[in-house]
Length: 164
Image (cartoon, rainbow, N blue to C red; front, side):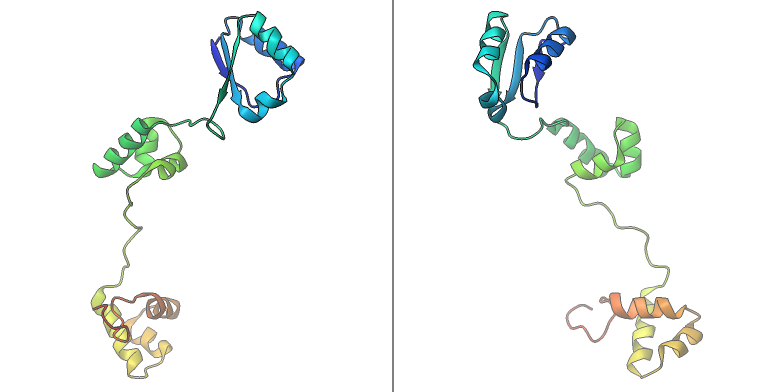
């Protein structure tokens, strides 16, 4: 199957036999330093006699599954205007992986259906001590939405300085 494999379990006689059965042309086993230190000298010598080299890797954790080429490919597709779902479909990877690997900031979700002018009007009415319920009935906007706009829309809020 493979001439080189990565092992993340302690090498026992049972595991070594299983590895050799599954990979008859095995030449190298790589493992982390901590596993190498826990492996019996007898097993290391036996593998050496079989011509199998044990290499210790310095990198900690699981080896990287995706390379820099895929990251740059995702970022260029984002620049072209593709959305993460389309990128995932085109590259045959999960959408979560696209979000994980991207370096670019994506566009935010849907825009508000209420214009800046309407939002300014809400703030002006509220400053003139008109109740939220009355603003809602005047502008035909749900009360909950009025509260949301008053709380979150800093761009149109005249009380916040330097934002206009």
